[in-house]
Length: 315
Image (cartoon, rainbow, N blue to C red):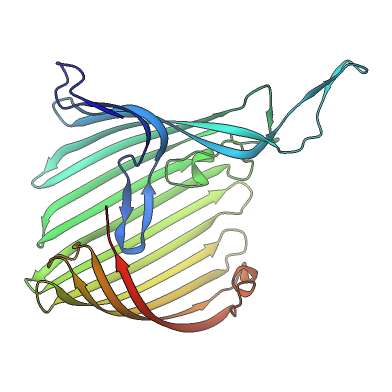
């Protein structure tokens, strides 16, 4: 539910409550949502503070089976527990964002802080060494009028309970996520000519955990689009991903190539709905956690070609 203009002194602000997608930030090229606290929540957004728009929200996400309960034994007159993880851990995320800060010509900055704190009900206990809480800081600069499109550069830093999902959701019931995460993202779209648009993305993410179970992720992708008409286009996509294991230093790598013929409702690279006929070839080389690949019926080092028809629409 939304209540716009709920105060005369805040004409552009919105008071809201319920379950919703809340101000999500993503890398469209690989469908990666790096700032997304969506869920049951409430808040006030788009408060005009002169230099920008201020938003507040509180969101809850639940870890099922993240804690264990206690029972009173009248014979021993003590509280006892089987330590079966059959109780939930409740994570509250407090989100503050200041957006639309004009820092240069056609350039705007957004600053966000997410703090996650966990608790239980009925005296249930988290596992020993649970992270309990953490925070994530986000700085994002969007440059408009950038070679016919835009460029967006994002820096994120997260600690402890906020490193599990690394999106703004918290997991304070876990004892395997103590540490920190640093993420850098550069993405955008440029238009070299009326007939060509190019989407691109670069991602660097390093998660250092106290238990040495973290990883470093490198990702790069580019998607040129040539427009034959206002409703028909050809797309080429090349993507590369590499994940380095913190404990062993071993690396998993994946390379992907796609060619697609597309019919879409408009000439923009963002135009939808769209129908695509595509072919994709991918090859990979896994050096750690190889069972995840082999259990799915693949070899740890192999390649595959797939082709198909895809329909995409947004609403």
